[in-house]
Length: 167
Length: 167
View (cartoon, each protein chain N blue to C red):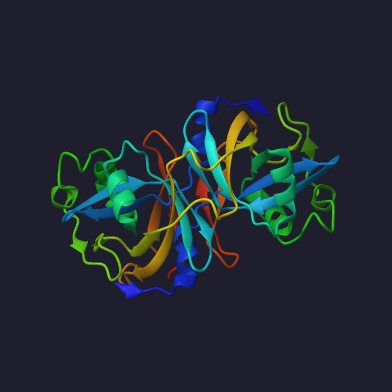
């Protein structure tokens, strides 16, 4: 095993799928790109996500306790990148990037019509789950395994395989 | 958009890569299969994961505050499934499934020689991160988008694309 700089660890575990997170506050909708999220329970489905305090969406998510996670397919990749590289502080990202907000059923944040799936969310609390935060103190890679294909479980024993860039 | 049963939501967001989590306690190493984890910060690299109290690894992780996440490539898929379908309560999974434990540098839990990457971890605490737990209250899919290919970000603008089973 070859030691890996800690600054490169996130490239190993970066989970995806990349999603869009929408919020709405004071009559204004916003959307951000996010890839740090994980399932926490099956049903009711619980999801954890990291939204930095530096993101414009943080305050809306904290204040309203509501959001939508919209899942884009590959054809939306250029829009997903543009949404991720701009801030709702400066522009209306729905208008700027041609995304269509659709009223949700249970929450104030909008669905995104162009995405193949949309999930409406209430926010909950962290403490009651068996959620560990782990800090990487050493990282190792096997230089003999080049471009390994990783396993991505999608339930009921169905896996997809994604090729990784060489490390 | 078509309404999706909440019991199927985890198939949309199931992140992967599927990983192996090793622990060691009282001189005995154990390994479990895990796919619910996410990056929480870049550097120092922080990772959140869900380990159920029903898992044999839970007590060791809680007691020692140490573990290793080993990332298997596709060729290990049968072993990954076997590790996930058995418990360290009953068997020595390293011996039973032909995995080779290798001493780590900083933690008591072993690396897994057959995996292409191994990360040594200290556990931390949940409260100080901008970590939201979201509960899905409604779920929608677009029946016109069949087998969408999702985006998986691997850092520095590099994406891999994974085909999804049709919903």
